[in-house]
Image 1 (cartoon, one colour):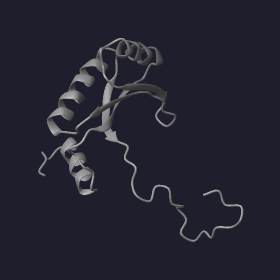
Image 2: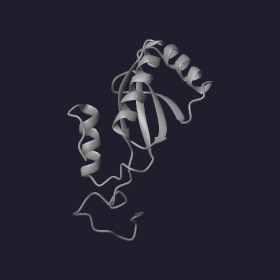
Image 3: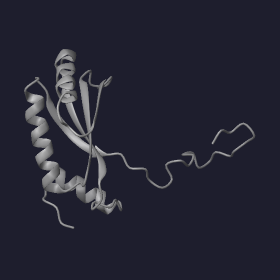
Image 4: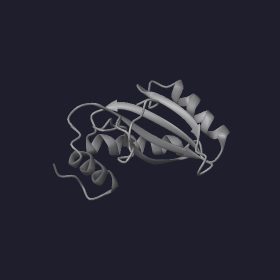
Length: 128
């Protein structure tokens, strides 16, 4: 597959290179950030009352001190669809003093459940 040479295209190319099937629906997380908690909560309420077909979650990013509204949409990660959704969410976030901050896909990868320390030897007390 060929993707445009921009951040979205590079992300999709990296996903394809990692073996992720981009022809099936995946849970795509779009990140909206807000400086003010009240603005973020207002945006959350507005999305909750909309016809948005997805999950939303609001949390405080301890590192940045900003409020993150995560909008999870189950969709086929097509380039044009991603760009359109990101633009729509950016325009929405701006109405509440926020902005989009990218998107991503949480994907269970082979080996995620393995113990990360190769030198570790399991004993009777191990819980993994």
